[in-house]
Length: 234
Image (cartoon, rainbow, N blue to C red; front, top):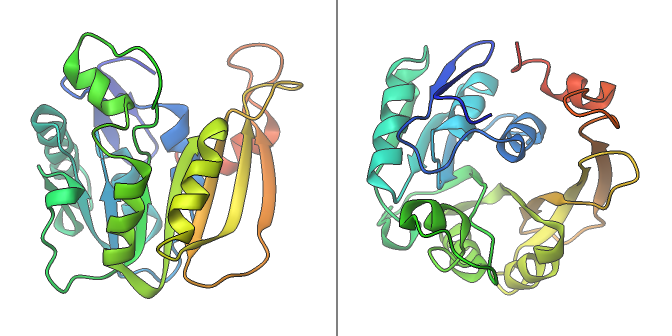
């Protein structure tokens, strides 16, 4: 998915200037998240604008998308302007830690955050910040969510499976509690690579699901993955 553009059923993504390219993580998150009835949505770290555009396709909500990297934000602005939902999409070049949002509350907050906490950084600082969570730690992320999420809102996020405990522990201090989780397996017989969580302020039993992305052969997608993403992929 590293082409300079990527065509979906109802919109296209240009990504030649974005530090964060279209990837399976965001596609699965955008397809899986339940945003029924949402009137206001916040996308933290929008990159190309993919998650915001998927949310716009799935809802009638007004969507604010924050992106710290200027070139990526400009790319998202371009992608929003070219879409049929341009009047409901706003991209802002700002870190969530600096977003004033005075009195603003959102029914849904979604994020595919940077997540490599203990690995060698890419010498390209823009690519490094899109992947390393020293630019946005899980603690900072959930603190922002706690500030801007409405009383009955939902926070949707995708993280590496080995970081799940950190995210859940950070969220419970807000307090936010996981209510849904989707375990993502890259291939049959592989380990869980990613987990999608839905958090809310209500503590309840977690509803768990799982999905395998590919069959044993690369680019041969499972029936469950094709069904999940059918409204988006051509």
